[in-house]
Structure formats: structure tokens, C-alpha cells
Length: 226
Image (cartoon, rainbow, N blue to C red; front, side, top):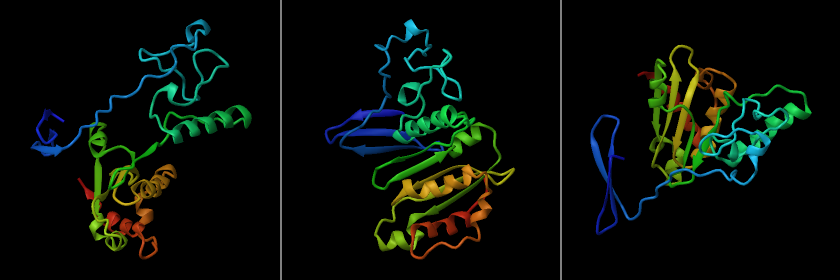
């Protein structure tokens, strides 16, 4: 957003689009999300010598160990994406390392998330803008929900699927599904990311008709250099 103005009807928000043009959105309310403060100030961390950053998040390495040997941290208080599924995965990583003798690390963990809006938004990995900023050569695919039979049947055709591909090795860098069950659908693409598999694995797959996953046919067919 580049400008916010209160009006008699509610609020106007001016945004800058990717093509450089501006657009004003009108609404009744504006929700401002500015993050959260960790509940760590009364834990006596300083007395134990446990380091935190300026915001109060407990510092740690990729195995969730703090700067004090034998002290680990999991959950929102460590910083990073504050999701229940992330905290649970922290527990699994730490449990596997301490109790099962494994060597798991969270440094390159793929973290999906969903916004339960209407339509629902599911996202994982890098956006197109983030991938370009990192210098990747890209292929991009996009497919509207309005072309998917199941979405039409359910009268939920708003939204789209989008996928960002590393053009050098055909691996998925990120994916977005804005539409019905977007949070569920995006995790199918995340499975390819976690398997380090090329998106082309899906080109000849068989998807049940009529399901929303049929949209992956069109999504994969739409991928081209960008």
C-alpha cells in the first residue's frame, strides 16, 4: 500500500501493482497486522546467559540449540513464521535429534501457510518477486480456477493457481493457490518441492475427475519462460 485514506464509507487503500500502475481499493475496514512480541521478557533468560535478539526472540542454530549448550528452543518464541504447524515441526525435529539420534536441521525447511479468506489462499516457497530478487532464471505458470470443472460445479471460480519454477533445473521454487481449498491444494505442490522433484513429474499424471487437482493439468501446461 502506498496510501491509506479514511472516507465516509470506510477506507480507501491505494496500492502499486507489479506493472507500476496504481489502483485504489475501497472497503469498510482496514486490518493492520504489525507482528507480535515474544513472551520472553520474564523468563530470566539473561541470568541463564541465553541470547535474544532486540525483539526478544531467542537466538538458536539450525538444530534449535541456543547459545547455551544443552538448552534448546521451539515454537513462536524462537522467531520466524508463527504457525502452529511450524511449532509442531520444531518439536519433531528436536525429538528426532535428541531421542532418535538423527541429524535434522531447520535451516532449509519448506514452510507452507494458508489464509482462510474467501477465496482461501495457500502459499509455499518463494513468490515470483522474491525469486527474481534472488537472481533465479524463471519459468512461470498460472491457471484460473474458472477453468476447473470442480470449481465451476461448486460456483467457486474466483482465484487462480500459480507456480514459480527454477528454469535451470525445473524445480519448484514456490507456489500459490488462491481459490477453494487453496491451503490443501498447495501442499500437493509442496510435496514435489520436498522430494526435490521436477515439476515435469506432474505433466503426465492422472488426476480424478471432477476434482480441484485437475487444475494441475492446466497449470503445468501453462508453464513457460518468464
